[in-house]
Each structure stands twice: as structure tokens, then as C-alpha cells.
Length: 438
Image 1 (cartoon, helix red, strand yellow):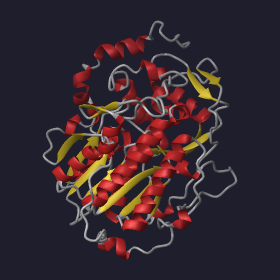
Image 2 (cartoon, rainbow, N blue to C red):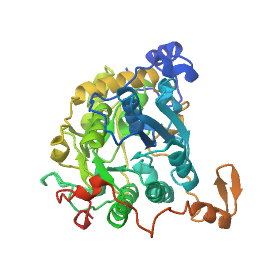
Image 3 (cartoon, rainbow, N blue to C red):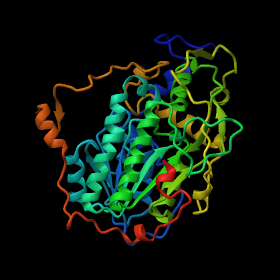
Image 4 (cartoon, rainbow, N blue to C red):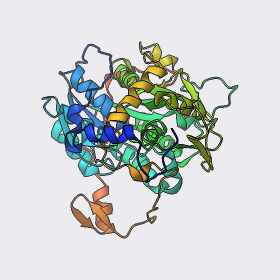
């Protein structure tokens, strides 16, 4: 079978699938409930967990996992519902007594403080971020606003609320490119990001480190390889190519297609974050590493086989590369494995589960996805300083906006916060958040 032209007639298998798919408003009712597999003894000092970006991809996996695995914990999904998030990712939890959705923006001190105070949050997983590298080349201001300023807001509000645990989700991309003959990078390796997205995540880590050192905010940083699986917005390579092939259209690789990435199934990632919550030490950094390093060309071949298509040039074309595209990333995840975590899902099994999910739900889970299946996303860069913007439901002038963004005044005694017992006990140098890590 030859590829269909974009916008042309769809192959028979797609027409049949669309005819039998449920209405988009109810599509979540037909979907499997996906979560991790780990289960630990509940922690006595964890009561309410706030997960920012919880309606997005990885965050929603952890939301479902914690809600369904630990009825003792209350889980607050905090999300502004940006383009890549959807309530479908956690609608199945709406009837669970320990689940709450709170719509808010991490860049709004008022929203964050309201959530923390209203729900008496004691633990935070901070996932919310702009994460699509291609978009960061054309709209880098947005990445700074969400990933850097948004993290700063979260830290300041967490400090004021005297949060007991703040787990910051970072990325392996903060390390930069790793040569093929180089050893896997440890948590103490220098950060050398090469694109605006990775730079914004590294900058966010600097703030996390500063709040640990200056205020003894009890923080942990997690740096993961590429996570894939169901519920991932189809701007990333595996869901995007799956949706294109389902439509009978060819896939387009950046550059020569020989770049490699290490892929980790989302269920294993949820287990990793669960392990960090229950076994991780305050003040530490943990790499979440995968053994499955795969080039983009090899990935295309595997996807074509999943769709029963021939591995030919008819289905794969090449475009110009990104302004800079790291050839590979490689992290050493032994430190997390020492806590008991292990990668359980072989890539072949995870890919099949993922492709099957997108063949059934990918066309409707987020609504119309036509605009994000192109080779490069269409980007409209905002001005550096907008004249005004909407803050909540109020149209603010710049001066009023600055006042609103100052955030709550911290409540402290003589400007000093009492550090948690775990924070004072943690003094490990191997991957401790310290000057040597930055």
C-alpha cells in the first residue's frame, strides 16, 4: 500500500476505525486505565500531593497511579489545560474520593497559593513545563515564562507553605549531547544544555538548587530519559508518527535520522517517581535511565512493522534538521536502581501497547490534531513585553500585573524557615544538589 497524500482520501482501516470510535466527549470511558505497578508502605508525613501538569502526559500517569494505588493520599491535579493537556487523561478518576482537579497556572502566584492553602498540600511533584524542543527554537520566551518563572513561583509558594517534599521533574537534556564513546553521565555531571528548552530546564534547576541551599526547602530533582506511551500529545515522535501512519501518510525525519534517544515506557516512569517519593532522599538528584537506545531510523522501521507496512522509502522522507539537534543523550540511572526501581517494560512491548492505543484513540483524544502533524510546528512568537494580558478573569495593565505577580508575602519568624528533619539529615555527596552539580 502506498502512502496517502495529506488531505486526500484516507485508507480503509482509518475510515473503519473512526466509524467505530466513541464520541470525543465520552472517549475516555472506553479507554483502559493505565498506571504504574509499584506499591510502597504509605508515608506518615504525606497527606496531600499536588501534581502540576497533572493533565498532561507523564503527570497524568502519576496522577492515576497515586490515586488508585494509595487511597490514603489525596491527589490534587493542578493544570491550566494548555494545548497538550486534556481532561480526558484523568476523567476516569472523577468519582474517586481522593482525587481533585484544580485549574490553575504555575506562573500565577495567586493560583498556586490558593491550591496549596485550600487543600493543605504537603507534597509537590512539579511536572508542568513547555517541553517541545522544536517550539523552543521559535517561541523561547514562552519556555522561559513557564519553565523558569513558573518554577520560581512554585518554589516561592512552596517555601511560604512550608512544603515537606518538592520533587522537581527535569530532563536528561540538561546534560547536553553525549559522544558515542563517552560513559553514561552521573548526576554530578556538569550541565551543558544546547537548545532553549533544555536551557530553561537547567535554569529551573538552578532555582531549585538555590531554594535548597538558601532556605532548606526539601527538594529532590529527577532527570529522565525520553518517556513514551499512551496519553502523550502527538507532537512527539512516537505518537506523531503513529497518527501519520494510521492516516496512511508518510513520516518525515529531521536530518539523517541517525540521532538516538533512550526510551522509557510511561508506566516505568510512573514507578520511578513513586520510588523517588517513597525512597528518595531530600537534597538528592536521580537520573531515570533506560537501556533502550534507538535511532530515529530504527524507530521508523519498528513503527512500520507495527502497522504491517513495508520498510521502504515510500513511507519515510527527510527534512532539514533543527538548528541544533543533539546526536544522543546517555545517563547512568544506577542510583535510582539502588532504591529498588527497575525498568520493566521491553521496548517492543511498550511500543505495541502505545501504537494500539493511538490507533484506537489518537484521532479523537485531544480533538483535531491536524495542525501538529506537520514536519515543523507553526510558531507565532509573542512580543517580548506585551502591553497587557489576561490574569485570571481580569484584564490587567502592566503595573497591575506586576503587582499581581509579586505573590504572597512569606510568613516566617525572623525570616527563617524551619528545615524538615529529612533535609537536615541528608548529606550525601553523590548527586546531592550542590555547587558541584551545576
